[in-house]
Length: 275
Image 1 (cartoon, helix red, strand yellow):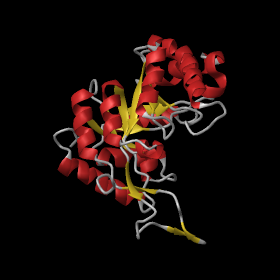
Image 2: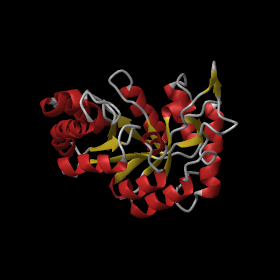
Image 3: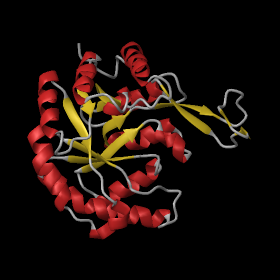
Image 4: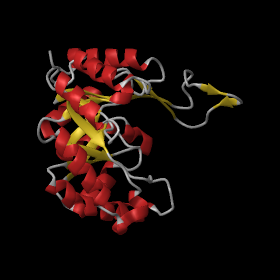
């Protein structure tokens, strides 16, 4: 696997040029960037200058659209952005989540499958892989249902290491199920605070009564990142980007630096960091 960084890991206000430069300095080979018409020329130039591959994302109202999903906008995106910039992976996520009842979960999965089924042939035509993220919306088995229904080599998984916690799922177990289909990642760590934890953050009016989750630097939370890295290295297909997604409530840039050091020191058997 190759080290990468998602743009917002360094803060939402970092410039595109500074982000690409920092990512290269950290030893990344890949970056996660939202590429659109307005910034595609800058992204192309910066990726070429710093020798970085781009993984991007695209979205639509997949659940609302269902079998009526239009493929024209996605085809234009593949043709005008992915192909010219050499982008091979486009991440997507559901426009709903399993806790909603409008529609209920079973219908959500049917609609999502129908929608992505309209896009998968387009992706295959342009040499692009759609990577469906477990985006704090569905559990691993539910993501696999969508892949099975679409049944296309152009639909795979963007595995987020922290999001399983948010759907009451163990991240290592989710990794075991999704690793064989994973083509990119969001490597996220989280600290869990049960209501009985004395360090659980307080809110006005007393203690919160539900589980509290806070983002941390990689290796400083409760996600077993080394175990997941080992699973991905063994089971994932190809040279998968190990994209750090830092969602720390503290200094994100400092948390990213600590995360990169954790990868260098603890995950060197699984993740390559560019010199």
